[in-house]
Image (cartoon, rainbow, N blue to C red; front, side):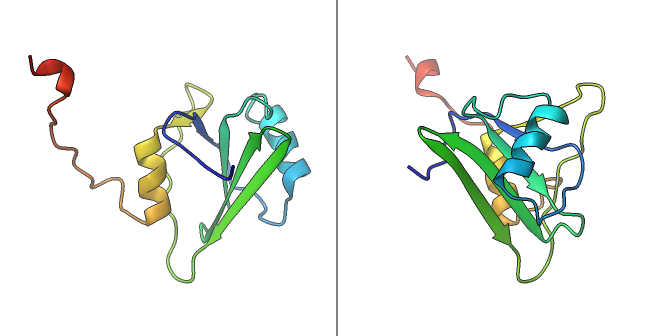
Length: 119
C-alpha cells in the first residue's frame, strides 16, 4: 500500500498540467491525452507549468492514490519529451533522480558487474 517500485512503468504527461486538478480530471488526461489505461497499475506523472509541483497518479487494488510533491524552492527537472513516440515512458532511476532533485542531464552512470556475468 502506498508504494512505488522499480517494477512499475512510469509515464510523464507530455504537457504541463493545472495543479488544481484532482484524481478524476487527471484520470481523464491519462485516457484522452496520454492514450493509456488509468486502471492498468502504471504510474502517471503530471508537472505544473512553473515546475514547482508534481502529481503522481497510481491505481492500487480498490482505488487511486494521488501523491503530490511541492518544492519549497527550486524546480523539478523534467526529461525532454520525444514527440515521435507520442509518449514518455520513464525508467525508475530517472523517476528517483527527478524526485530527489538531481540534475538528470549531467548524471553519469558507471559500469557495474552483475552476478550473472561472474561465473
